[in-house]
Image (cartoon, rainbow, N blue to C red; front, side):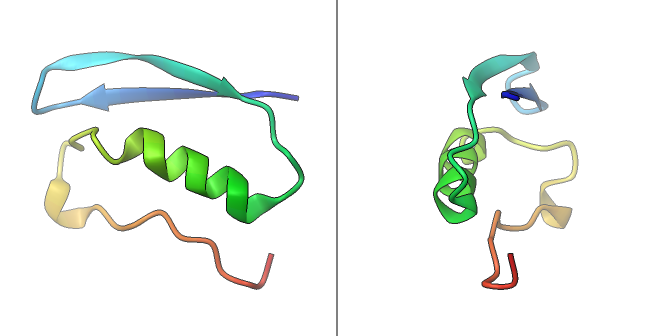
Length: 58
């Protein structure tokens, strides 16, 4: 099952859909791909945004 990445960028007043990600089974690699996509998107409340991380607990 694939994952479609979507976004709302409040700074640029744009929204849309990004790439479709097919999970590889390696969650760290998948999260790195997702984080790379979202790093240029400005959230509605940037002061509340955090980094996309993956703990070793997965």
